[in-house]
Length: 135
Image (cartoon, rainbow, N blue to C red; front, side, top):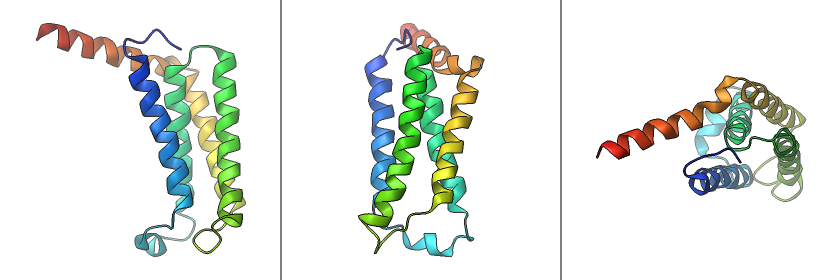
């Protein structure tokens, strides 16, 4: 973990986000989803997995842990696509392009996390701590 002031809070929020992606991937889509342009869900898949991967890069400092998380997120995306086709075929369907969008989102999050942007959460925490100290 990075030397964060509130590591349990951030890790808990990240785990909640992962859980939200799992749940939202397996429940029936909202009615408005049928009104969206064809294949526009790929942007949602990419964005969700980008957010999960990039936020993980904020939390984990070691390269090994980052790769484990990235591989785990790609595996999660593929497993959820499989589950949609097998476990809830009446509400969802497996789509290889969704799996690809998930993997590309992870790759983009991992790539941005390899830059100075990976220190965003540390900077945010120091600003929050300074604000709280003034009170």
